[in-house]
Amino acid sequence: MDNLLRPWRPDDAPIVLAAAGEPMMDRQFASVLDSLDAAADWIELMALRRAEDTAYSFAVLAGGAPVGNIAVSSVDRRHLTGWISYWMREESRGKGLATRACREISEWAFTELGLFRLELAHRVDNPASCRVAVGAGFVAEGLERARLLYDGERFDTERHARLATDPA
Image (cartoon, rainbow, N blue to C red; front, side, top):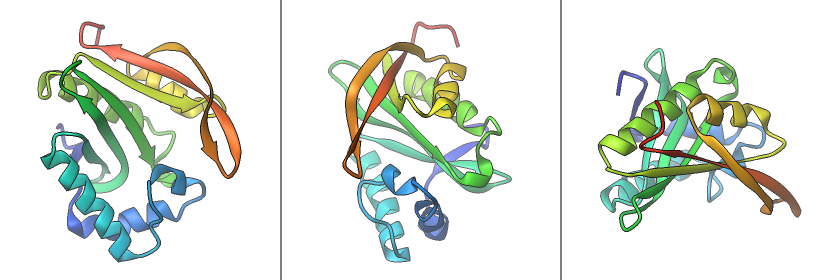
């Protein structure tokens, strides 16, 4: 994938652990990642989901080292849909890597997985994530009120989608 993306490897656990420790990054992981073992378990879970054809998670690389994650999950073979998610380490944000990774995984999902529709959503108070979505060709489709719950507070999200027939 153009040396930008590769599957996560067991030796990436220290990077995953460091990412999970950054401010607000705990929201990106379904469980607490507070040890190398927990980070290794997360990487193992990503490999299991790939084997089950339910999710495909890739390390986003800069200079050959992982600096973020991009995934297509909730793969639905009946409707040929998937859900895109992404995160970047603090020092790698704002450099266009997430947008490039989002474009690349979208093309991969359309060609390799045969999906037709990809969706993603971002908190409305996260304009950087919106720029990634729009820059990767995702069209805003609407507001989802109070969709997310973090620390007892509800957040609205904006949903975006890209179709295989949309311009690249």
